Length: 52
Image 1 (cartoon, rainbow, N blue to C red):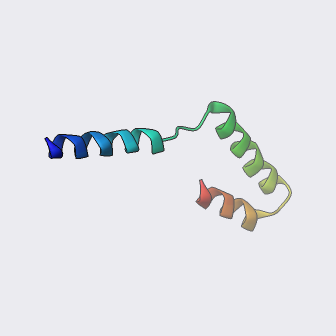
Image 2 (tube, rainbow, N blue to C red; image 1 turned 180 degrees about the vertical axis):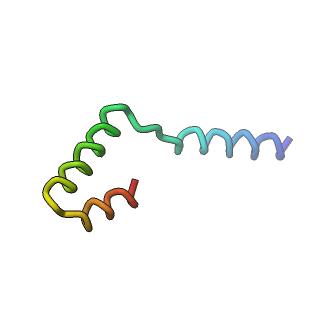
Image 3 (tube, one colour; image 1 turned 45 degrees about the vertical axis):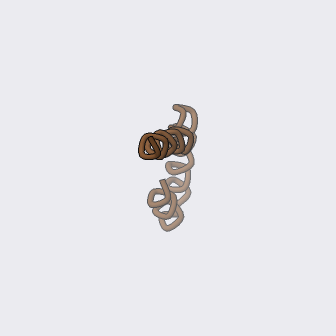
């Protein structure tokens, strides 16, 4: 019984912690990345690319 409770608790925590990105968030990140590239700030663009 304790084993089932622990497994259920872990599954519940994982479900709460999991967060998918919305299409708007992804598109905004894409635009920010491209803007940095166009401005000639390649180092900042690479940092952004590594972060996501």
